[in-house]
Length: 507
Image (tube, rainbow, N blue to C red; front, side, top):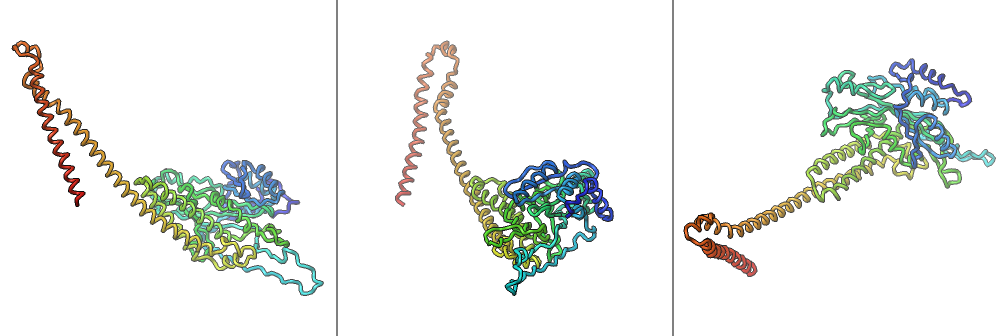
């Protein structure tokens, strides 16, 4: 950090960053124009998120929380020149912090694993002589942190997509809002960002500052509507050459990968602050205090805490969605539910695989780091064993999902039975309407017979010397005869039904 007494002017600060960036061949940063509209800021104390619209507003809000000794975290996405100038000069941030953030590893070395050499700090013993000066609280509790800043390098993966794209789509992929240059995968066939860097420091004892790139986005139309493909990020701090997968948040758009949203999710859990700020029990043994320095949590343990948080959030989201479907949706099953359940099954399989892979390759140093810290021994979620708990929960949810599939099939069968009953009812209704038509035939058949014999021309009938009442006199016995026939059929059917019912009761 820069000495506050010798803070440079804003123009000098930017000039110094440009000078330091010049030797870095793989580093380019747009530091000329005013592009603050591309910058997004999240500032929170985990209980409340404070709206930030400008660098000055961030400085003022941070000063309030710092005076109150309230722990806070600031996440800045796609930081612009204006924010760099103001924050760098006001907070006395070393220009090399921004230079390291803008740096890229060599393109042919993106997948080189980062090694972390860490040994537990030596805790001094009690003074041998009663005249020895009493050790201070910080001397008795040495810091587990080493560096004033840190950064994480990651490489993006794009699953199940072949770069067979039109020139117009390629141009959309190549138009990234990121102000800092990052490498691309295949410059010609797949011009999309391939790597990223997350940098962080502590401007003061009570605050963390994180810098992240703009989100990776797939333009609308590049992926099929039925596609389940999405970009994932791997951070190269693992015993596996594939690195640690940092999943995207399932409860968000699958067409983008946002480190900004991922970090916000991580920082909304208040207990993470105890780890980030190396909080300890004070010398009275009754309260947690922030360790008296501005050193940061090492990158490797931060990655495993962050990844654990994201996997757990995704597992909670799937648990809620699957139980909502199981307890609500399948009461009135739709065919679309089958596809949704298969999507959730695919997501859950991805979580189980990701948890197992990460748990398998946790470095020994990470185990030692969390196992030796005096205040984290009872923190279950900081221990690597937490991954076993998440895997067990995921397997239980998988079993529940299989039961949901079976319940869905049972609900579909019940619905089919209900529909069959409804069809039977409709058939009976149609039969009843047919009976009504039969009753109408009682009148229609005799009338048609009479009119066929005598005709309907009353004037012609009168001209023949016949009385008009002849028609009606003829009609009456025909109606009676027709009614008698239909009554006989009805009576026979009723008698036959009663007889069959009596035979069934005897049996």
